[in-house]
Length: 185
Image (tube, rainbow, N blue to C red):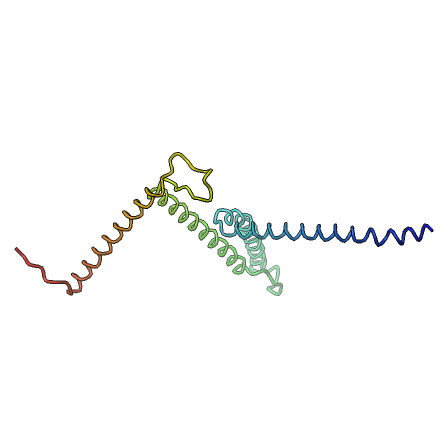
């Protein structure tokens, strides 16, 4: 009788366990997707990438110094006639190349971070006030400009760009000699 209850209770428990198992799998998949999205976003951030590369650079430098000291010790023993050059040593140039590659990556991260900062500063300089969006009306700030003011600013920027374009065209025509002859008074 007990075996009949276990057998009859067994199938009833299994669907519940399967549902819980499926729910756990879905939660794990969602967490993995969120972590992948977060890591992809952080890969584009030059400061975050810089912070990730610094420990790698330290490790590469330690490896480079270790190989250099081993090679120096090996060469010293060969020069003193204690050992022959039959033993193999690690290649210094490979570790040096790895170190330089990491340095180049760090330099690019710093340059990109500087460019981002410069662009942000220029953006704040030429458009200091925010324009409230329709999707976030609750975030309206006191120093934000109205849409009409924003349009006026954009129109003035377009007008300035057109003036610069026309001045450059006029100069290029004068240089190439295609411009209309000017009358000297």
